[in-house]
Image 1 (tube, rainbow, N blue to C red):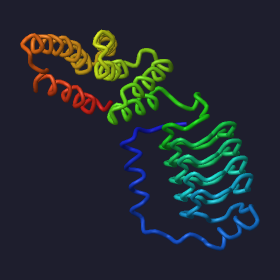
Image 2: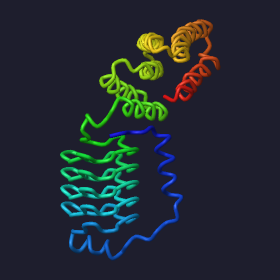
Image 3: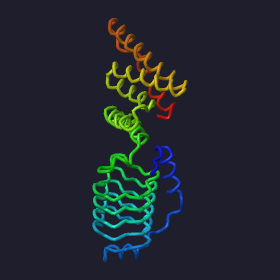
Image 4: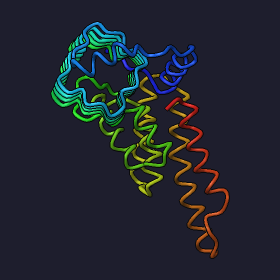
Length: 261
């Protein structure tokens, strides 16, 4: 199973929604609600927000671009179902059979997936941030890394570090993760840890022959030291940190974007 970064995902979602809207098949929606069975039905773009669809049989149905936000699909049969681009935010999919399902580009943020069967499911481009019960073997280091960057950009530096740690558990020598974690640690006031991570990133980038990454890591480590010294000097003079210190912080954030972190 493959996962792509958020930029690709955003483009993927945008391409879906610029297509002229097609009305949902009301006959099939009514069949689903009355019989709780709708195998091979056309439910694309159906609005099923908050629907109680527990234990329904939707095998091989077309639910592409359907809105299933916070729907209850626990124990449902979604085998070989097309859920591409579907909104499943906070949906309950616990115990659901999603074997062979197409979840490409689906939004599964904070969805409940405990006990779900995802064997053979296509999760290419799916948004899985915050999904609960997702088997860890389905999540690679790059995905954890991307989630960490998203949290960093939101200002949730502790959350970013949690994701970076999980990425490093999967791939201990992931150089860019050390650089990213260095910045998050710095924002939390852990200068010592930030410098250690930047130095580790420098070593790994050097081993990889990535000179731009190595130089960026050196600049981060040196910049942290210089910022500390500037702040101490400013405090001794009875001033605040000054604009230079703030600009340094902004420079670190820009560096994240520059390296696609």
